[in-house]
Length: 279
Image 1 (cartoon, rainbow, N blue to C red):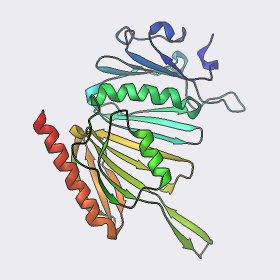
Image 2 (cartoon, helix red, strand yellow):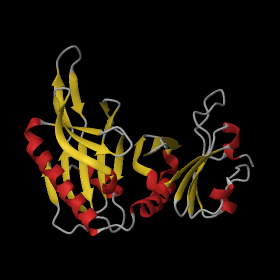
Image 3 (tube, one colour):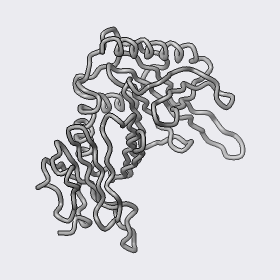
Image 4 (cartoon, rainbow, N blue to C red):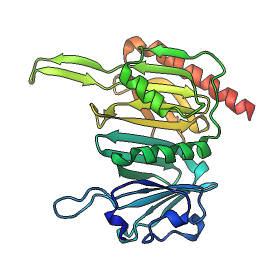
């Protein structure tokens, strides 16, 4: 059967589980974990925004392979060269961004397949980050108290055995508008979390606006975080995170939260230094 007609995402345990109309490179045939992602729902003219794909995780490599009719070259990268990942969803629209030296790759998918995607990404992070570590000190909670939405988002992002060493949160804020249109204007919320092995940034900001029905989580191993500081940018204060091989993360900081943001940055630097010394 033509896998372009499949509508369900599913796990792949071996090459025998892959749709028969996919051609796997020889080096990718013996993988440890995989997932099939169906194409986008066709429009009225039968066109799809993206083709079916399989994502494969090997002992040290990651593959993203599109359906042969898409005429895409299979994408391949050594896992250690991936510096960060961003995972976002908005209603039925989901996407994964894998970033690294020579391997910027965006994988869109329909969120009907979210459970299978979550299972695959947990396997990926286990290989990429290593075993989850428990924080070696009480959690430092800085900024605003977590609201229900971001507390649930954090619970979803943490892997089994992973714990929070420090966090900094700025809740979404609403401002009344009188002109030219009345109503409430919302600034997005931002949550920064330091665990034993990675830095996580959860936000509901998307293309300059606030997502009401979705979120984006970016995360990077502490080993790829080159610098973390609070600095001015375009007349505002931001937490700036420099990650190897990509553009910096810029997280707006309200003036009254600047000191707490600086404290969070220092805690992350100390944690990162301890991690380096242990290795």
